[in-house]
Image 1 (cartoon, rainbow over the protein chains, first blue to last red):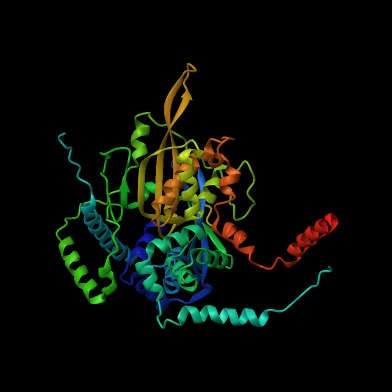
Image 2: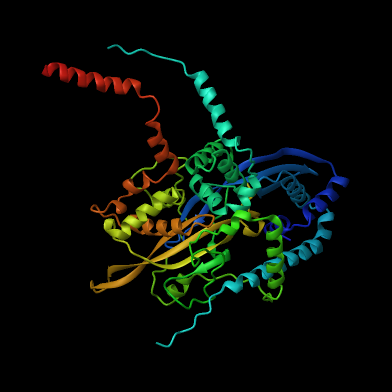
Length: 140
Length: 367
């Protein structure tokens, strides 16, 4: 599973999956902290839809962490103030960068978590659809 | 009269700062930051938008510290922002990936996907709700339980729905001009001074972080005749958009290897503005252009007003102030405008004495 999908699942998951996966790595491998979780900013680049040009919308507060596992650097970046999760994300990223065997077994868990996220999203959309307008044309 | 350099006031300032704290806590009530985040989202959104820093927690903290004073809260956020390193730039956000919470059109009754009201006070009576005086957590819990029970009857669809933009349907019909992706690097007004004429990217950045009241007032002024733009809102959408960041060192350009870092809530507006253009036969014909507005959080009035001003500034007109980019862009920033106005109350002893001396000399000369 590629990073874009993997990080989306891990960040949106609310069942501690990132912590569980990071713990598996910490139990077996040495993990060196390269950058302790720190707060910083990400500048949002936006594409406007009138002329399809780019502009900077503003910044978003993020937490970033970097760790080294098996000589590979992993990065964890997450919106908000989330030190623990940023560090866990960095460890998982490093595990994938190093091609550790544990990562192969994570696929099923990640897909399962993705399914939970999609179900939650579908339910939310179904609830919102109560506010969809049903126009009736009046006879005048 | 000679000028005298003075110092002092340190003790008075320290005592004044104690009064600020005293005034905030003397009522013996403590407002939790999370309470502000949960119950004052509109205020939090406005502070994030005007400070150009997306963080509901920090915005709520600034509101608490500023005792609800918006200009002070925005100032605190901007000051805090200047202490943080900018670590990344996001990939271009595309609002077609927005998970829509609310989406309406004033141009079409029937839009594909339908009009989704979401959460809005637009259709409520503006009557004070005195039930809120005795609001209790217990009562709220009961209401939530009943509401969530009723929601259980909603049957989810089998796929996540992404709403196509209204304008895309009109572009397909050839009613609106189709533009190719313009990947010109945007100007960043936090890194370089604003120069005129300003590029579109700089204009949009200033407008989106403008003070809500100022942006709204100037948008309104345009409608009232101090401008030449009166649009119809094609679409207002509110929802969450995902943010992706490229790996800082990887050379490979594979979007699938970007980092998803989270999502932000925004309001986006596309306003349709009728304009006269010349066709291939040099005859005048009616066409439409789009005014674009967007801001952090849910702040529809600001986003609509921004879309008006965007269109005004696309068409400079000497006679109309809202079409003058120096007039608009240099006066809508919260920190700049409130800072300059409020500096007038700081000591101006020397400059005023100088003016006073001049007046005295003139009067003496007359005598």
